[in-house]
Length: 80
Length: 142
Image (cartoon, rainbow over all chains, first blue to last red; front, side, top):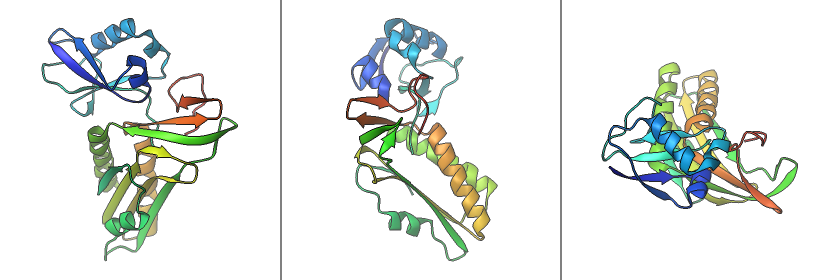
């Protein structure tokens, strides 16, 4: 399935844009997606953390990606 | 009221939103941009937010606070974009019957917002720039 992934903060700079287009297998786990991301963009490994948000919620490592999900890369937050 | 905005925050408006006739206290936290970080002068900060998720995370934090303290009203406004030292980046206001509840709830909301809301800031120095807290090697003054 084709996914458009939103990228914010330092993750936007790492992938080189606000959106990242990736072809992912249906039913992919979050942890598999992160491994793929680390392989493609090793700079993510240097971050203090990287969470994946699915449909505006922090996703668990073992949760599953579905067609049409809104996926976003959440590097360490620093609001306030 | 939960607001992510590029415009300067109207502090009084956030206070008015939080106020209630049944309240004996309105507690307000105002976060401002500091002019130094890591011993260097900060020229400005760049804030960005995943707005829809930030609003939904802040809503969850307020729901959690409302379960713990008797809140009568609340307002949270967070600025994004370019902010110079001295400018207001965030305002949290809560009201409750007594002051202790308002102090505690306000602190809980700002502390948890800083921990969970998908909002990001970059410090711009004279000699470079740094996404705050992004890398483990940089100390986490935020």
